[in-house]
Figure 1: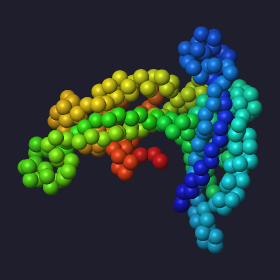
Figure 2: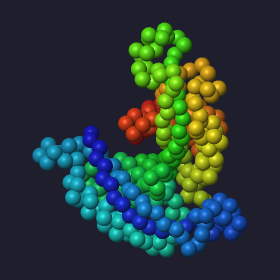
Figure 3: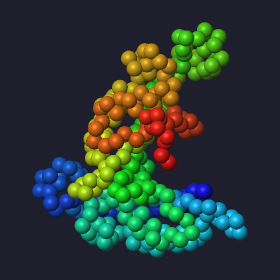
Length: 136
Length: 140
């Protein structure tokens, strides 16, 4: 088993708000992140896949295909977008880094054929990141 | 859905590696430059990983405000710009980064209850890092 990690970057805006909470609760729990006009981050995404090395190609996965899947499923949908308003997963779910990692996993897992998704890591800033391994 | 959240913090401190259980010659041989009696310092980076189910209502493993607050009060206020050898925690152990990892893990495990403490990883310099997951295998 060999693990392969590919990085990508995207920039997006978001804000945190739960309509079930009162405005006061939203401000208390989410602080500055509750500003309805949103704020932005430069996200770094690290996608790790695992698999056996194909004896003919020497690859775990064709990096060109992985890059295409990443671009199509994640970057085209999220780069330079307001996550709350433009990415369907976040119409009714708060676009925290945790939920972003889960949404990216759910977009990628069904599209990967040769290799198996091992980990999705999303950096919101260089000092804050979330890992998701797909457990229920 | 279980997720792992990692936050990086920084502090600067001085230390001297010296064991009372060894002779001066042994100390010098074991710790080399780090045995200099006047001590020396590092800019430490501490990476703290916590885990847990993502709360449906907040979308969070834990509120970062709570984690930041615990780390500032329990770790950074205690060690930042201090001489580690002079702290009560290192009165009876050598302030290696291995021991610092275990100590920070134990302090946070007692003080932070908003999520499961998974791992402490400390970069002593850009070339050295140490990790401790409470005695468990580190998940990576």
